[in-house]
Length: 126
Image (cartoon, rainbow, N blue to C red):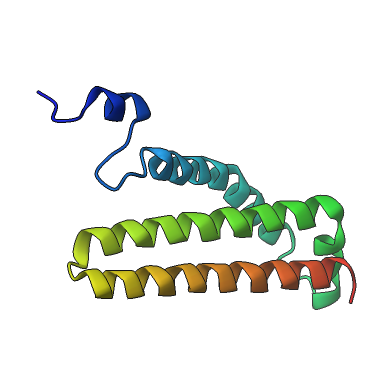
């Protein structure tokens, strides 16, 4: 027996009013990370022993730069969502939980921006 109203069942809203979007975004990033991680590992494996200039040349290729950016962004989004679930499950005081959410988001955004900046800087040859 469900305690949800018919409208809530249609909208798919849970107790947090966020619905299933959090679940699906986390699963989507997980699925996207599988081929991106395999590409990343293969790319590193193919460049074992290469010097800095060769690695820069590899990352300067448009496909490599795009895939690396997607890898970083999918990883950061997945990390943020995963940590949010941990905080929701194990932090019980609302003010502390809010601080953790803010710190988690700031860390993820900062890490993503720094990584994308580094990828752009290397790939554009600055």
